[in-house]
Length: 433
Image (tube, rainbow, N blue to C red):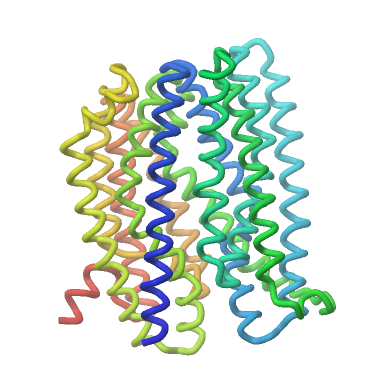
């Protein structure tokens, strides 16, 4: 009963923060779309999609692995291993982050005059964001594992976008600057850095005092084995969610890339209930599965899925009805994304109906299987999206994402039932009757 109350209270707090962050994200998108205009906003959205994928790669899967290992080590009072896994992950991520910056800048220099100046400058600044963003995720994962749900979510979900909004308003209205994608990307770098500093302070306050005096012990093989598939999962998930933007930008349609990215961001509001539940649900999965408490784990899966589906369906219905009206706030050019928005909403509701399957696989030691399923689905997404975009343009990108999303969730559902004996999502609700 205590774990159920903890899930409910923690999820409620996370839900409030996620919706607050969604509001800020919406305001940020609205502000940037209107201040930058379709062309510069498309460039920013395209580069932002790339740095998101690269940041997941730079994090090496530790943004999820830390959540799992820190929770287990703290529960077992394994302070030497707890200190070791934090130190080990930081050093590896730092090295990869520097490599991303170096290779990225060299790549832009080689391309030279083949890239428009605004795009190349935005890319160079974006590469600097990559390691900072990866470290931010790692810090918030550690804080979550230590029990600081709100203090983990606030820096990334509230502070980062809040500071970006403040800068854009001050620069455009106060200083009367004419902003472009590179200037806004610089502001993104600054806000992400400040959010990381805040999360770092929160981690130092919440970490157990025993870590300070503990010797450092490494279990590098176990950490690598867990982190590698999580790296694939994180990177492929980023690719999966941003395939439409990446492909549209790659073929030179940066304007449509911005419109599609905006539609996808609005559709993501329907995912927030499930994401909020996942925030506290992930550590609970690891603990219950480690204790072989499968009946309680099944009950939590059912409860989380029911909450997520009801909330997602309600949000999606409102957004679908108001699609043109919402997009018109960003400017008349963005109304072209209304049909893509509705298509994406259908996919997100279907996904929510099957529950937190990625978290179930990650927290029960099936990272490699999850990575394989996601990698195959991401490849299918790219293939399907290339064809759909060539035929239907902007709406084709949405259809490609939805078809691949449904296939991915069905594949995970089958695997979870056959391997773990658990009924995923809405099907678990039906089977429990």
